[in-house]
Amino acid sequence: MEIHSYFSTNYLQNTYIINKKDRQETIILDPFEIEAPLFELLENLELEVTSVLLTHVDKQKWSSVQSLKRIYGTIEVYGGIDDDRKHDLVSVKELDFFETCGISVQPIFIPGHHSDSLMFRMDQFLFSGSLIGAGLIDKADESFGRALLIQCLQETFEELPKQTILFPSSGPPSSVGAELKTNYSFRHQERLTARISAKLFSEEISR
Amino acid sequence: MFSRHLCTHSGCNAFSLGSDSYCAVHHPDLSRVYQELENEVATSGVITNKNLTGLGFKNKSLRARRWIGCDFSNGNFEGCTFDESSLLLCTFEGATFVSCTFDVCETMEISFSGANFKDCTFRDSKIILTNFNGAILQDCQFIGTDLMYSRFIYAYLSRTLFEDCNLKAVHFIESNLGNASFRFSNKEEAIYDAV
Image (cartoon, rainbow over all chains, first blue to last red; front, side):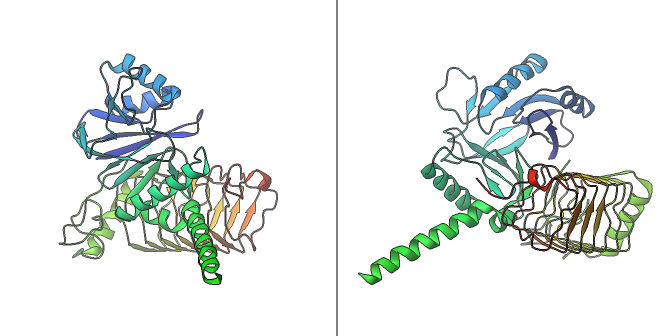
């Protein structure tokens, strides 16, 4: 499997191009904008986009998907939206695995932020979208959602091999092991939980 | 570019070195790996897709090369120079750098998470979107360097100088900056608190 990254200077976000070695058909993960340099990169690599993976569907990414369809024709789009007539995509939220471009993909649904927030695991690589970047977790809409998001991410990460390389939508790459050690949100949440537990237990003892 | 294969030694979960079948721990002939890499560095301008995890380099010139998708995690670099190099999508997690130079170097989407830097310089370089989370930097100098969007979360910076650097959107959350100096740098544009 080969991975190439493209950094959109307009949106300050990463788009990933993933293909199986010696195969022309390729996956684009989270296309933020179909800019000339991205198209040039695809042309130089002699790749043809046949599949798009979306870690979360928004207006900007959906517009890029439409541009890709105009360039490459039929494209299979995978995301986490359920029962949506507005977006013509295959919902993989409930699946354990699916295959596209000869690559086995594990969609991982993470609650707490958007209802369609997915991470995609392929081989030893995890594409986390905007849910988690190096050292930080994306903001959720409210405190319960945020706590749930952090807890679900932490539990997911603890089950994954530590050497799994993490490719987020924004910011530099990292690894699962490094995030468990240095992610501010994980550590902050642990401290918060410890403080609350200590307070609860001390109140119970004093009763 | 990235491509990884697991070590074929039974029960080993590490990635294999380069195009070989074994990782640095189980490889039967590491000297050949070093020799092959040395030949490639001498003859090729672009080194892509190499797993060089756990290897050590002493007084080596790795300068004026493009390194793409290479994994140097847990490596040891002493007296090495990356001057005029360009590094893209490489990882140096847990690596140790002693007296290394990264002058006129361009790095983008690199992870130095948990790495240890001692007496290293980054002069007139572009260290963009680079991950220094949990790294320890001692007696290091960043001079005239653009560090835009890089992250130093939970990093420990001791006697480290940022002189005339661009620190726009650089994250220093929970970092120990006690002994760091930010002379002529736009430190007010850096981020110190997680919101």
